[in-house]
Amino acid sequence: MRHFAIAVLGTFDSKGEEHRFLKERIEARGVRTVTVHAGTRGPSPFPADHDLYKEVVLSLPGGERDRDRSIQAVLEAGRRRLLDLFQEGRIHGVVSAGGGTGTHLCTGIMRVLPIGVPKVMLSTVASRDMSPVVGTRDVTMMHSVADILGVNSLLGPILDQAAGAVCGMARPTWVPDAGRRRIGLTMFGFITAAAEAVKARLEALGYEVVSFHANGTGGMAMEELAAEGFFDALLDLATHELADELKGGYCRGVGPQRLSPVPGRSVPRLVVPGGLDCAVLEFTREAVPEAYQDRPIFFYDFRSAVRLSVEESLVIADQVSARLNLRPEGVRVLVPWGGWSEADGPDGPLYAPEVSRALVDRLRQGLDPAVPVQGSDLHINDPAFADTAARVMHEMLEA
Image (cartoon, rainbow, N blue to C red; front, side, top):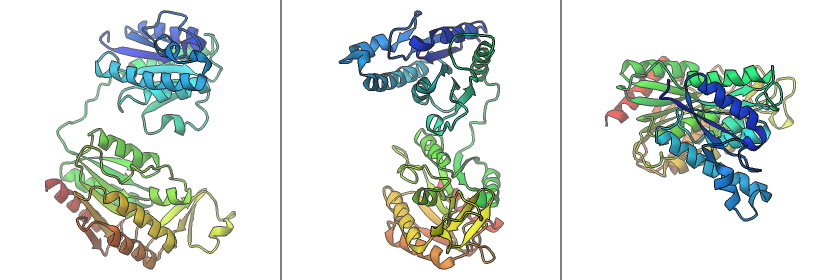
């Protein structure tokens, strides 16, 4: 393991004892360390391989007195430094420990590393909603339980576990098959049957399929990986995120990159309106907001799926056509007229074919003529529709 190295990243000016302990526990396992001080209040209290306070903060007008500027400068410099270290083969993972500010700063830096590079953050705030700091990356959050203020009989073992975790993660024993072309597939709970069937058919054709839940983060993660060259094609079976983004729903959180062309690459994309019949909102049948009391609703657990109106559907159609038109080559749309989710069918509570028709008609009007729109009379969860979707995706890749 001596050829591996782990970056120990943190605000050493406030958490020096703890990060030095992390460094020692990693080295005790026979793994080299590269220390990166990202503090903005003073230099590292022990010799650091990279002291961003000395290199960056002291060169700023006002120095550490302008805290916001200092943090932003260290964030940007830290990202460049960590990425350089990785690309040069000098680090194989990163670990950090911190409170609220340290967590946001150090996760903001470590997220620059590609997916698959171990990223461990031991944090006092790990028990809170960490979606803003984890984002679309594979950051492992560990709760420190106690405050990070000195190494003691409670915090010491947890710090040691963090050191062991990142060391273990840096030496994977499984290597994936690199010979198959990879397809990114979006899915959604109401079309699970469709996703499973499409995945099986594509795998039978020799492809590797990586699925992403269309929950806001999932779709954005797929777009980022496509931009990094990970995928040969994208099958957007679930575009439900756009409905929740419009209505502030449970699966919101997508940005303009969603459904936009992959930067610098030509990646075939097949788009299906899976889940675009509804927005998923967080209320139960006992507490239906007044604005939705006249809407068709599919109730389940603590969330409820509300049927979109014609007006809302037209807004989504315009968004989809605008994004797909940015680079229409290699894009196709496949519409299952029998229904777009398990709640959208002749016997379902959200069945409203006239609303779906309005969305697709508007989409046809707005799309570049170079984007084919193909229809199927089947329901999205019908196994025969999976056959069609897999066949069309395969044809796009072969072309």
